Image (cartoon, rainbow, N blue to C red):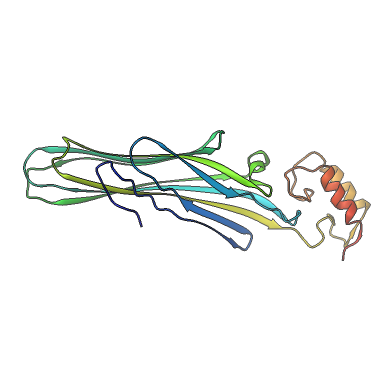
Length: 240
């Protein structure tokens, strides 16, 4: 649950992390935690997609980034108008690399403090989805190591004139990363499906050479090359 804060003192991000595997998808999710004020950096470490020695082919990586901002103003009826402003933003990029996505939730209002005391609740959110499908975009996500992302988050909470009414706020910044993949057949090198790895399959592999076709990419690294040829030669003969 988000932690409320007064003024721009404490920023309550939800903090979670975990991973789950469903049929043909792997999901990793989590969130950020920090304090309000200047922009702060948060390192996100994700597991790369494991092809299981080429038995799983990565089709797409879907990134979902969500920012939710809550605020509450409590007036005292002592007169005047109060300008309220709150924002929660997060920019995501590869570590020392290009920007991937930006999210920002923002609340702005002018309240009349001359009526009877009352409270008002505010909510805003921003959701950004990025889908990676091109081989060059999927390349950093394949392997047996980690993908490191950098999130730059900032929360601002301002009431003008200050210290007249109570202005509270809290927020959540979360991410979900989904790997969508196909499971290779029991004999992936049998490209023509006749039950035997032979010259016909070699011809199909050579026709894909240098490309990125999933059918011929036996090790799932995004390119058809000598490594795939080696796997085919290892599997040469009747499929078990």
